[in-house]
Amino acid sequence: FCAKLAMFSVYLPDTLFFISGYLFARKCLQTEEMSFKYAIELLGRKLYRLYPLYIAIFLIYVCISPSMHSGPVWYVYENEVAYCQKYWWSSLLLIGNWWGTKQCFPGGWFV
Image (cartoon, rainbow, N blue to C red; front, side, top):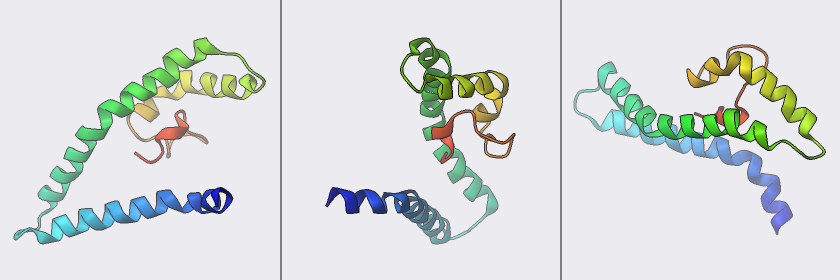
């Protein structure tokens, strides 16, 4: 059972994105007066809710976790830390997907 469940886990982010987009569109269309300003306000509220946690996890990833280096695959992480020291700002501005060839904070792609 666990193997089958793990096989379908690749579809989970897409499913959650679909549900989030559906609920956002439904909320926008339920208003009497649909406007661009209202959609931006909803997106701003969502960002206001997610961004502080994103920054906290990002700072732990970039500042604290490099000092805990050890293990057989540290050399892979070491390259990511070097890239992060150069392009950290792109992940904080949430444009890390578009800047460069890889992302500084791999877990933050969904935000």
